[in-house]
Image 1 (cartoon, rainbow, N blue to C red):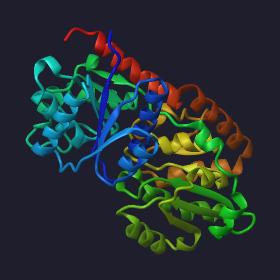
Image 2 (image 1 turned 90 degrees about the vertical axis):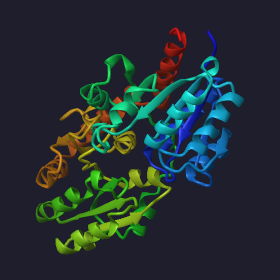
Image 3 (image 1 turned 30 degrees about the horizontal axis):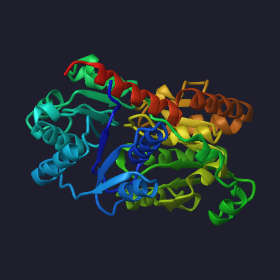
Length: 375
């Protein structure tokens, strides 16, 4: 059986959790003697970081889902590299890759795999139901980052045998080896002595739910006044969140840091991590927090309950429920023994189920299984 020769596609111009997973996959495959190639937007973080890691990067501007010149370029890379897998990591890459694969002569046609990282229906943004065609034709297999997403695709009518769940993984060494700079960071963030620091790390986007964490803050402060909050990340909702904090009278208790490159060190400075998303494919920020041995308050969104087992590895709230977030944060503040127990169990769960090695091996198993199938 031939070895997988993979061409990855990523059209995202920014750097988020999905792009980190792609880089982990590229690194893991290369470490196993299976170098692959990636097409990414020129001058953007995905291209830059993959190149810095020594991978073969083809920089090509890709405009949306209907970009025939880009699809033809992908086809040329398929033929030049004798590729037997195209692995699309974004929705636009899915469309472009499927067209490129269809335009490739049948004798040289690679398998088409699509990564699915979001937990909403394929019909949510479908134009006259055309997404049904997109998802049912031109794709050989889907890899989802959580079982919750797999079930969404099955509910949307895709055959179960077309879909494999491979949980996202994190690099534990990235957390463990990060400098311990708690005193320095607390001073930088102007955290008063004796205050607990409660944090969130995520893009400032609607589905990440920071508004529900901010909604919870007045209740938390009413019972535990010696607490400071930090929200790490940037995005389109920044001004709206600032305005909400001001309206609720808690703006001076929240530090909005913007995008940071020292997140592992920041996590080590937190006392509690909160992830208030109401849509979440899995939640790699939660994995990072657990790896940093933090107690976590999360929600029932998407695949997050596959990480956070209520009362065992974290505390889980209903989605869009600020009062529930406040209740669980106060529970952790009042019960340090519970917080410590959850932190230890959470770290153990990440080590066992959510490492980069398990993610790479799971993905590689999908490649090899598809190679063994008849054309």
